[in-house]
Amino acid sequence: ELVALTEQLFSPVKNLQGLRITITAGPTREAIDPVRYISNHSSGKMGFALAQAAAAMGAKVTLISGPVQLATPAGVTRIDVQSAEQMHQAALSAAVQSDIFIGCAAVADYRVAEIAADKLKKGAEAEMQLTLVKNPDIIAAVAALPQQRPFTVGFAAETRNVLEYARQKLLNKRLDMICANDVSASDRGFNSDDNALSVIWRGGELDLPKAPKQQLATQLITLISEHYKN
Amino acid sequence: ELVALTEQLFSPVKNLQGLRITITAGPTREAIDPVRYISNHSSGKMGFALAQAAAAMGAKVTLISGPVQLATPAGVTRIDVQSAEQMHQAALSAAVQSDIFIGCAAVADYRVAEIAADKLKKGAEAEMQLTLVKNPDIIAAVAALPQQRPFTVGFAAETRNVLEYARQKLLNKRLDMICANDVSASDRGFNSDDNALSVIWRGGELDLPKAPKQQLATQLITLISEHYKN
Image (cartoon, rainbow over all chains, first blue to last red; front, side, top):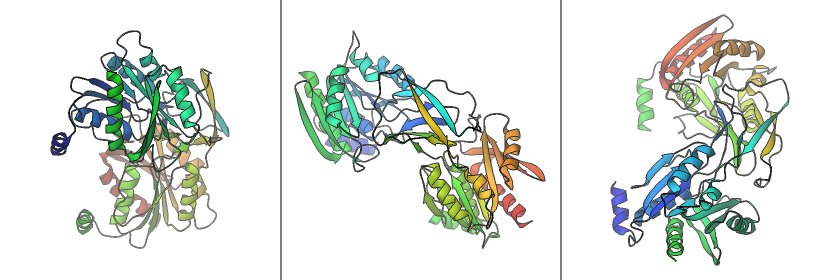
């Protein structure tokens, strides 16, 4: 409470007042059976930093989060989900009531085709096949909304050809903006407190060099809100 | 430090002095590619509670832990691992120097056959097959040690036929003792602060009813050390 108050006293001009921003964060968990799951190394730190920055600048923020170990930033409405399908539902409901949608979550591309009701027993076979099916593409679904479509910002976490993949994703999914980051370096990206981003839109690109995620978040929210207004 | 000191002052007689106990705890993580993995819901709380109880009773404790969000109990030597293969190596090294080995970790039965060096790209296909191969059976390997075999205690976390599966496991893996718990109830087992255990050995069984994990841990360490001495 005190920290939040202090941050607000020292925050930049609250020029996002009245703006509704929805942000997704963290990993998703795709159940295999009651005890096992598939997930990824996303810590949720970048998405939570964006939510905190946007709220501090006066925006009305909804944060849809997968399973993470992070406290909810002051003034932010948080919705917790586990699977990509749950995040998809929550995201579409929130997106149509938002001016800006930022998809920062590392959503699982695939889920297990059939979730076992009981814990799978280890069989005699040395190998086993797990059949996976494609999850809904949340950011593409938001960007394709025929009505009440928010300004849509995606993330591309890659280990190689980072910019190339990000530019393709911007065009293929009809996003307004995409933030590319290289998660192969251990000193930034997933689980790190620092990050570096290349922000790409149809008319240009901007590199945000390596910095603490909270500092980067304020820069990125400022950049997004400028493009939203133009 | 102060908490640990207070606990020691009020701890029961330190009748495990000189005893070397190795405990495994938490889940393992089996990499799919640099960002994705398979894991399970084990929080590590039961294994960490056992380590704390054993150390408080004077034992020399080695705790081999998968990725968890828990502090190391006072006086305990902790070894962090990620995958089942890493845990297998660490466990066998420690087991041959131990009097008692307690396998409390929820070790993945299978790992991914080939870990991708770069993040897998989502293809055009609606389905995808993930080939899994069997992991080493750590507790069975410890129980089968031809020399320097410790008194070996396993855990069986099941969602149905709990006691039946546990009795089979005790015999098949030639364990000295097994602790069965039902992880289908959300008020105990994985991630909960409470647990209930059925402890089974060749000559008998004992139910330890639902209690805080730390209390249960002291009861269980006492029971194990009594059977070890006889």
